[in-house]
Image 1 (cartoon, rainbow, N blue to C red):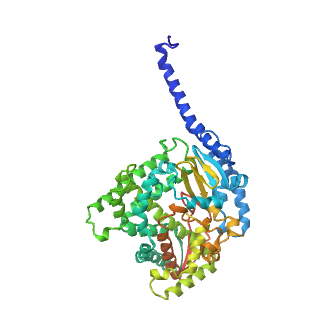
Image 2 (cartoon, rainbow, N blue to C red; image 1 turned 180 degrees about the horizontal axis):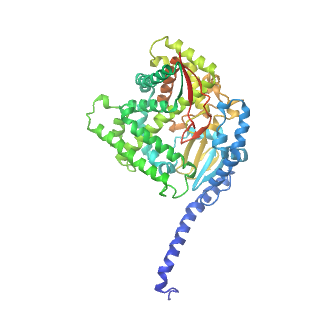
Image 3 (cartoon, rainbow, N blue to C red; image 1 turned 45 degrees about the horizontal axis):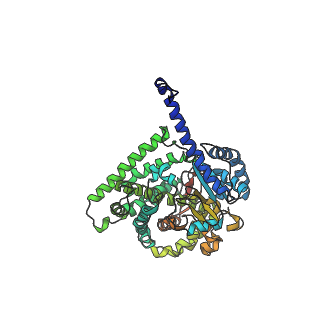
Length: 523
């Protein structure tokens, strides 16, 4: 049988055929496959907003944010405590809106990513107790946030994650964290001395925007504690990781839109260049360390990471990537969480003078004029309550994110492979059914009987995540926060500057959008 097309027509038809194949591929990836997943959940009674082709619910999210953010903020302003407003209303109003419409479990889409949104306490408990490696971190994180996180401990799964956890977690056990108190004091006193000089030079009172100071302090601590170097040596890495974080935060809503990270936009080019630069800097430090003799002084976290890169299940991760990605994870998570929480804590203490006075009195009573040491930390009950309440109102990470790497059952829901699961920490931390009336109010007293006495059920308090993947560095973060806040309280009284503007911003973590300016007076 003869073909209906002559050889001369094929060059004309080839582009058309390729276009048809491309469209068929995109239609399958972007619609048919996600629609089959969505249908499996719909058949179990899971509802949600109707997605559109290519963008899912992204366009609706932008519309809701534009329409509802202002009105919701005005409603929340009626609570009377403008410093503890539920920022979910301004940053993520679409989640509030959909929760009102669809309840505590619903499905939404960002591009090709299908996300199961969960605030139901029973399902959260099931997820927290799940130890199966079939439930892991979303695969898109390695792609979309690859330049910042790669395949490090924050994003990896399976045997690779198990190996990374065994390498890294022991470096942050409580006994090691307490052993770092002296170096934390050294870093904090250097920062506070600069503030004392400023206060004295300005006649006893000075305004200081504390965020960058706290970021540098925390970076200095994690660098000294984990990498055996001072902040000065790692300053370039920290600065570039901060730039990378800011650049990637601008693109957050479009995560999941196919091909967006490959386009040579100005933002993408900036991300690519920073990624290359950071990789070179980290590898230079690692190579110089490898050339050093393996004396006990060098057996810090970097040494463990280098040794870990030579062993374990590294089929999907070459040794250089293992070192670079985990160093970037520690650099980012190790200082960003602590510095942001410290800034929010100071904002809340500055706006609640009674709690500031109470925390200061406790610090002075415990220390009795002596240098701070690890045994004193457990006696700082009031300060611990203040930190816990700060982490409730302003958890650094807004979500716990997981992905069903295989079909799994959670509670009564059969979750298909490929489904993302998102637990909104900020919503869970402000649920009146869990925390009682006035959950938006700053009230450290709610932790007077510990976490179990503060909320029912206690697993709904999750500033460091939930389950097997709870943050490995939470002990270091808590010790570091107690050290820097107790030293600061013992040296200064402080109030919020009239220039303070309350505008929490989502830049991969929740941080003060315009910084925290404090008016400091030396005690």
